[in-house]
Length: 305
Ligand SMILES: NC(=O)c1ccc[n+]([C@@H]2O[C@H](COP(=O)([O-])OP(=O)(O)OC[C@H]3O[C@@H](n4cnc5c(N)ncnc54)[C@H](OP(=O)(O)O)[C@@H]3O)[C@@H](O)[C@H]2O)c1
Image (cartoon, rainbow, N blue to C red):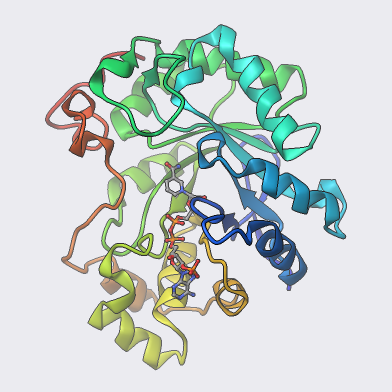
């Protein structure tokens, strides 16, 4: 199965369906999952330092029967490496864990910094530190210059941050990876990114296993009409909007299913976008009120660009 690719604003191509890997090693089978996924046709693998599983993915990458230049490997800098002087070491560490010479895409995982000592995702307001986003971004641009990274992008960036950031970028972000699914359609942000030539990548494209998208009655009705599953409807709806998807699964049958999307009618695409239920899985501002500006930009201003 060959997955179609989207063109990025730097001329590179990114497969429109990738493999998510967050919490993918909880059953200890991640290396097998990655090998199976590549065998099935996945070429885009979404990793992150904070997922603590890149060594496992690296082991699998050594064993897959596909040349490196056919793979699109993504990873993300954790917030405790935002100081510009820490970025090169963070990239080297990611490359070392994955056992590769370059990343196809490096993302700034979140638009805020944590103190260097904070190396888990379990943090408090006291662990935040002031590092301007552009300082980190310039250090990421230097990684492209050095060839360690082919392209750079952002994740969890809202429209206001992008509006301030984009005029200052020497290298434009190729993607903004954000939570998008039928219960969090992000109409305005997606439209803005696409107008700017920034591809949106949807994380939690199935609702992340926590949100009721897979059991939504309307999604189920559309799935029945297409003789497919609610997961396939959600992914097909995102792809129809020009959004790249990175579903995670440890099950072969689902890995396969998630590659086989369907063509929805334009009415179905519009109506799924009008589902009233709204729910976001990932929102650090639920615990840390200092981060309120991240997903509630009308209520609080992003402090540092
Ligand atoms: N940038 C960020 O801040 C950020 C945040 C969150 C996630 N991400 C990335 O985005 C990826 C995807 O998000 P996610 O893993 O949170 O959620 P997701 O892909 O929306 O959902 C994964 C859940 O859905 C299940 N599933 C997979 N395929 C299915 C199918 N065909 N039918 C029914 N259930 C299915 C999986 O279970 P099984 O594994 O048991 O099949 C798992 O419980 C992550 O893995 C990570 O790479 C990035």
